[in-house]
Image (cartoon, rainbow, N blue to C red; front, side, top):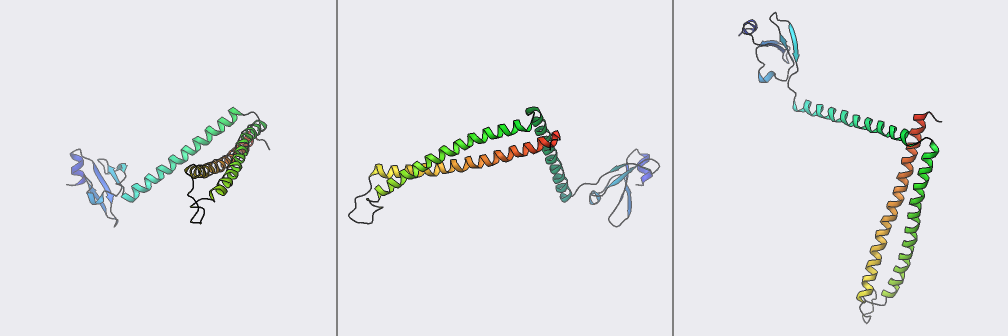
Amino acid sequence: MTALGAQAEGRKVYRWVDDQGVVHFGDSVPPEYAVHDRHVLNDYGVPIARQEGAMTAEERAEKTAREQAAQALKQRQEAARARDETLLDTYLSVQEIESLRDRRAEMLDGQIHYTTLYLDALRDKLERLQADAARFRPYNSDPEAPPIHENLAKELSDTLDSIIRYEKTLTAARSRKVQLVAKFDEDIDRFKELKGVP
């Protein structure tokens, strides 16, 4: 059917160009040409609309990646705006931010100090227990040495477990302090920027 015949019957007429540059007309686009963009023609053969061809799997993946990147950027921008608003609503001066930072850092310093003291006490206890356990098998190689008492073995094991646990607590507290100070320093820099303070 000719393009004019299709138009006479009230059907849409499409025009598209294939990979070899050949122009085609038809009242439908064959599947092999579905990826090509096409124009919809009016009764006079003049393009009145443009339709994009179907996307390949690669093009769809690229489009999805672009959309996800745009969405991630939008979320970062919204989070930054919200953070700026919170900074300006919460603080009146750089000194207020520094004061809060110092108070929170002092609290973590206290936790770090007391955890360190407790760890020192646990290590001293462990040394005493190990010295005591050295008289018994399996810590003593003498075949005549008696086996370690169940209570002593348990106390040794519990003390070692406590040391491991509190070492992790100490490491976490030190890490939190570093992160806290870094975040407050970022807030101070941003607050100065927003307020135009040198």
